[in-house]
Length: 215
Image (cartoon, rainbow, N blue to C red; front, side):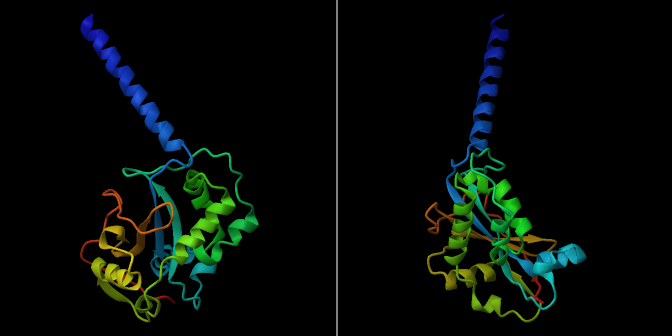
């Protein structure tokens, strides 16, 4: 009987801990820092092909980095799809973000999945996305890319660190998809100051990867 009682108590503790974890995961405004994700548009357009957004991928637009998202993070893990009392953005508000995020569809998706977790209104969240993007200088050598190249992650990181003296190698990570540059992710405090990334956010590409030129 004692064994059964102990087992029941352990199960109750486990359920309670899980419930607390879920509650924290769904609580808007409770997080530790942000990740600004800058997507390399040519890689995304190349992967999507004819299904890519024409506003972002049309030939001649030469789109390079766009903001994929500004993501609230925990020191371990991250919240998403949070419950929020904030109203959802109007279509005109998501359309207005297309110049920064590439498309209104992405702006809406990022608000729904990540923006609600910020605890901000949609208007304030989108303003913060713009402010975060403006704190980062895109290296000229990457903006002027006129041919496809293959590079290791360290070269991309070095270029960003040189263009942004406040950044450190611990505060930036480079991700790949199908051996092509996917994103440059930069970790920031809630005041948009550079900071080190938590271990589960650091996931640099290994080896060299393709960086297709804007078209």
